[in-house]
Length: 227
Image 1 (cartoon, one colour):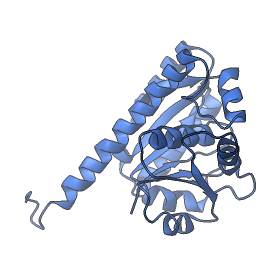
Image 2 (cartoon, helix red, strand yellow):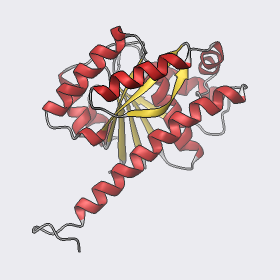
Image 3 (cartoon, one colour):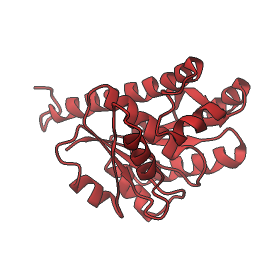
Image 4 (cartoon, helix red, strand yellow):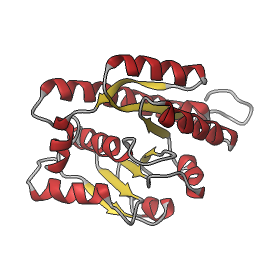
């Protein structure tokens, strides 16, 4: 089975699709075989973006497809290296199943308490339902200034959860790139690309750490020793 990274949240407009597309593009540039699963059958934002990307001849096309459930997405991802789950703009009963099927669960959020408070509530709920805390991470998106990031990071870390390094500012350059089937790391503005790469690199480190932990756990014998 592929490595599964999901982007979930309590509300829409906080950057789930934005980050899912960026991570898919980074992975594709890294020569990984990627499946981007869009679980919002109504809007299909990621599917439409991938079609635009392909139509414009991007040399790193993304295989994106809409699915009704995580089970359908997993069944269709055989032979891929990475399954990226872009969820609808609200938490649902399936959110827990998506989290259980994922090596890493990313919760994008803005910097206002209107965004941060429901994000922490969802983190608490996922942890309470048995999702290990080390699989969970918060990503800051659509910030206006760096001091917002600092305050938001304190909020998340005070609640006892991990916030990925870096943040995505609110910039017209990112929206323009999306309109052309590009990702956060593929804009004409190298400063914007560097900002986005910092967050993507932090997420990649998180994924690799989880894979190492899973592999190590799989080598343990029943009595807990390492073979």
